[in-house]
Image 1: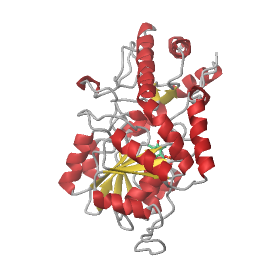
Image 2: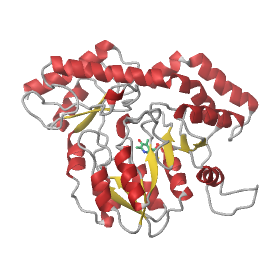
Image 3: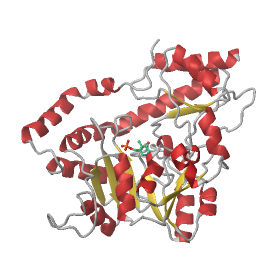
Image 4: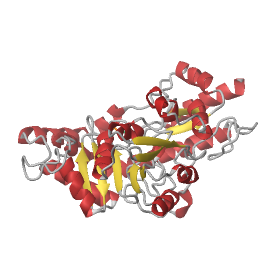
Length: 388
Ligand SMILES: *Cc1c(COP(=O)(O)O)cnc(C)c1O
């Protein structure tokens, strides 16, 4: 059997007539940059996320860059980021000649550890970027407590977590000063190319981001400060407006798929359940957990990625690949070990991230997977673990 890591054609086919009409409408209008489709999408996003201001931007990376620029981050400043994330979270800090300062993550969620964060704050620290990795909120009470105590700004990297509720029901992207999202096609809400979003409840930051998105220009051809071209296309906005109403149903399907994996790994006798961090005879594979799942709110984990851990990850990876199962590693090299960041000299004392990089493996979790495909994946993993 063949089980891809992601198959976007299935989602497209289900919404084809609506999506084609939306794209065609933009082409007919010949209004391609910002404009009414973008404003409509931004209103829908603000209502969905629960914030006062949303601005569509050119990518998740540019959302982060724009957020840092709006907060005036620059040379001499330090910005604290988890060392275990996608490159963009740290890359944008260096692009502004500020210094990304790496901290280790929590062993269950792989999200920033607020205690490790607290230790890294210095007089130069301006901001912290908690990442809501794989589709689950970071410990925002912990992050906000440290940030408030030290006067830091908070930029949430919600690229993998649009629509995720924190434990108290607030959605990610509304808790810190600025929220950043990506509509890269493999995210839970993907457009037909690159796209992103910034969110805030702060009118002054909103106004700064609105102007910085277009070269810092206001009014036309007058520039008070230096911005960039961080605009989203009308085509992408039209696609997003069609897809957004379906997002919660897709995320629910991902959660059901994750629950089925847990049940199957238990029935195969290779895991007792989700959220464990130590291996033993009954837990040869460690499963992801939705740590805030008890408060009655649904979207605590939207499983942008379903990431398991095993001690013989590379051998398991070869086994499932040979079985026709799509998989990937998010991420094989933490920031502190990346060649481009090694000159920063931040050492190797990040045991949780180093272990995650060596042991984690993402398996297919997308909404349109069939029960048979999930059973096949779980059986293939269990077969390997029982052999070894
Ligand atoms: C995808 C992603 C980004 C970057 O988004 P792009 O739209 O690809 O630029 C940033 N941070 C995280 C955690 C991501 O997963």
